[in-house]
Image (cartoon, rainbow, N blue to C red):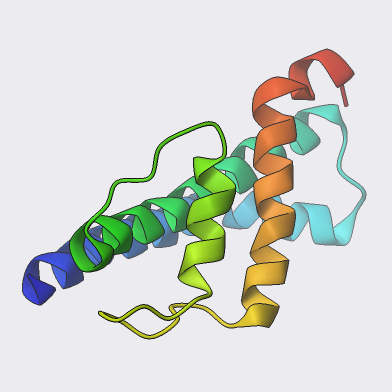
Length: 121
């Protein structure tokens, strides 16, 4: 089980690494000058993909270690909260500080999916 989980997490980590690598020029440009509408849209999509990768790791941990697949209307928030808590089968995956930081990404993910195109840049 642990070898399978390590392999799955490794795949997700590689995808996140590739995502950040592919957007390196954009990130550099946006630190040198304020991003325009196109850059903001690209950054938003990148942040969404970044958090989705993190969430995929958490979901794999929930399935393999905790024995459940998150579902329901609040599964995204519930999954994040669960990763900050130890269980009988594993220690807490993330610290309280990291939980709080990732909660911001989760909020952005929700806004990006449901309101971003309507709100504009």
